[in-house]
Image 1: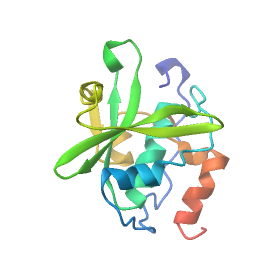
Image 2 (image 1 turned 60 degrees about the vertical axis):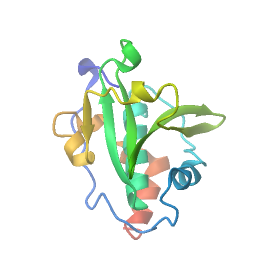
Image 3 (image 1 turned 90 degrees about the vertical axis):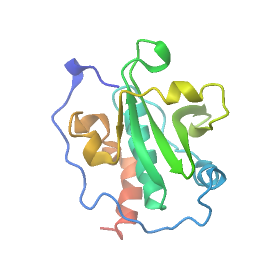
Image 4 (image 1 turned 45 degrees about the vertical axis):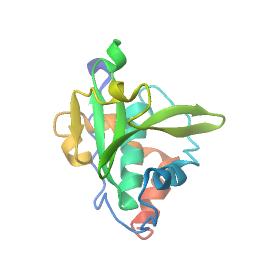
Length: 164
């Protein structure tokens, strides 16, 4: 996540941002894994496309397919000294988490964290959990989450809005 010294002026959130265009048939954790299994063909880039942009993109993509998601933020993730962002996916009766920065050759894959996984508790320790991009950006800079300004990913947003 960006340090306060490197913040850029806020970049507005596209309108409309959320558009449900592709309902996903399998709304289980396996459906989530199937949907996100191909990952993103965009490399991690500190302060440009890091965990917060990745989490916002993942939250948008899952919401677009009808999943109930939230953006999670921690100032000191895993008892460390580094800020981190990830996504919570609520599939009753459970909450799952998705780590947006799992490395894959050529880009990133997403890793799901289930209640019986050893590191599940770490992901449950967030300092903030936000219902959507609007809530996440009330007290955090829009520039932390602005994946839509990346030409590689902006096409996905444009297509979800009917090509506009």
